[in-house]
Image (cartoon, rainbow, N blue to C red; front, side, top):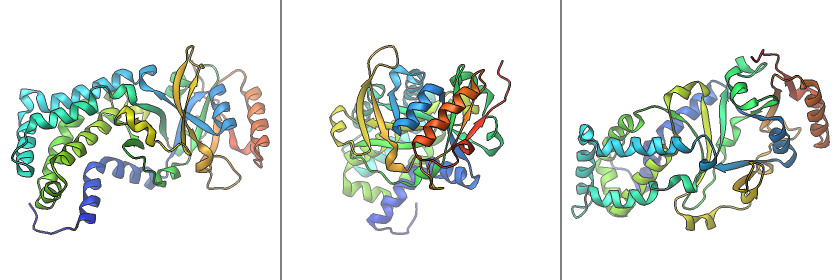
Length: 334
């Protein structure tokens, strides 16, 4: 424990450093290495993203990520409930007692279960991948195979939007790196509990009330559960843009100036989606600070035809030297 005393504002900063340590470190690494993001998709979808200046967030139940959330939830439960991990549960129980002697681990579970029992019904995402300069001419073969199909496009996107501070009351709206681990909570829970077992943090939670502590820890678990993926996918280097209300009723607090819900039939069935208005982030313009840096056309027999279509699109948007924003990959796709 530490004897240093912090005021309430400093405690909030400390709390965010504890809970979002991974996001802070990975964002710093991304910028230090001067990496961009890339969004791999098919040519039709890429055309719509640029034409409408919007990107869709789909519910995970309609995507490959559905089972991954159950995978993350199982990891979290196992990190506390498995008898082999009883140290985590005991340490959490002791911390709860320090904050409020009338509460216990079961009380935490009652709150946390309300968060995590049906996360997938409320979680909407779109996926990005880290894009190193070594892939700037060709893209990544495995991603063309997975997402490009016969007419793939890679949208190269600046990470500058990470600097935008957005606060949606009682909703998660963030961009976070995927955790490729089969023991993410086993590695993290002890570190979190140790950081909270500090006089300043304990006094903060005493003043705010034990329910606040339960909600803070539950929301941390919530974000981690959404962010975990099997380590076999690590080479994707994925980040996720996530929108996830903590409860159905909190959808009313989503800022409709930035995100709006809609129903689309592009998936072979009607499906509710959320769409981000990329106009709000200087997605495409002649300004060098724009988010869309360039596009790479993936391996395709029709690459030149596709290129002409995107040149036309960029010209219609008033983009100068449109041809310079388009790269054709000659990577052999077998």
